Image 1 (cartoon, rainbow, N blue to C red):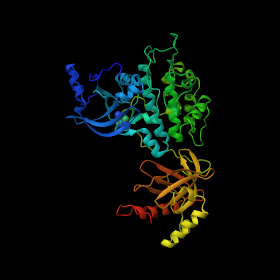
Image 2 (spheres, helix red, strand yellow):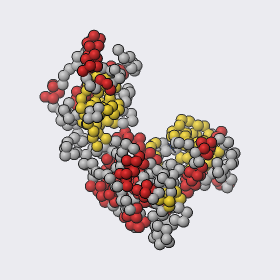
Image 3 (cartoon, helix red, strand yellow):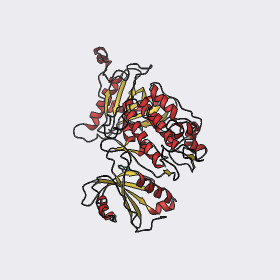
Image 4 (cartoon, rainbow, N blue to C red):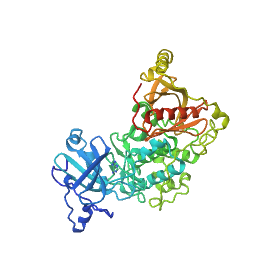
Length: 491
Ligand code: ADE
């Protein structure tokens, strides 16, 4: 590793936190202790990167969980990523704010580098976003505001993150943000804090630098794509993408290939789905601006003040944000013109008349089942997708992700499986993963949810027969996961 010889201590950092890591205790003697891997008890892996694995760990004799990022030296050297690793360490050492992962100390042995970091117990924000598909306005407002504060801190330190995305936003035990992964970050040595930066020194006030492409396709800014020049405003672009994704359920620039996504970004080709809130539309439109010197929050437009004053953040108390409670995470499910009462929180729409319409189940004999399977194999065009399983129920549904819906053929089969197929192109798109934890829930005639540990699926039945779906899925659940907990063998 350039700059760090094997066996040499990479150093410990001073920290103002009241951490019980002994590294902070030794600071009073001004002689940081050299750590070794033997000073830690390593637990499960909690994160995986291209050159690193993050483990939950405890320092021996210290009752505090930490996250230890372990990097493989040979792999880093082979991939020529030395600079990224050293940069990450340098940036983490500069940060001193609760909205960022904290670096306690670093050390190494002959094969590996070790970064001892604060443990973000809440995990990735992306996990919650995947589970709910979208966040409601209060939740979006809160997390967007915390990101704004974090970006302001970075701006004042002359740091561009360059890979801001929901995956890199971790949450502490009180569900406040802790931004991580500074491997792609850039430190602008000659930049001045926001208050002083007027851009009159010949350097663009946005702090531009020529760079190779870094980041993640969906969140990368047009200037990085066209001129390879990242600026502070590049993180503001990512913020616009993230706010859009929180509310809509998908990022604004989407495509099958990176190239398609890049084309859409450079042409500013995106739109807002129906139901996207007006003030959020205005904010996103002011952040997703091609000219990086014209993005709300950039130095040329007066910095973070005007961004924080935007109507979308009305009611946010910027000073007490970090000490206040985080809102309960809820999905954004507004009524649409297509379905006005669709997403009301009330359980509405059922009446006795509809309930008596629900057909009762018939139990098949083995012979009947065999005949039915043969009939499906020759006469049901969806049989090709279900791996030889008997289809127990099928029907067209609209599968929702945030504010977007797609028509799918839902196939409940033995196995059990819940396959979904794109009926227009006759392509299998995926499966809702079955487990004992799977739970269907009817919201009303048109809407039902399928809850799974990692995601809640929002499904709309245009035929308004959600109760039939829920009843049938429950029946299959009972068959496979009844009280003895053992999945039933396929007949
Ligand atoms: N995954 C990666 N880094 C982490 C951290 N510091 N805390 C929790 N999970 C993580």
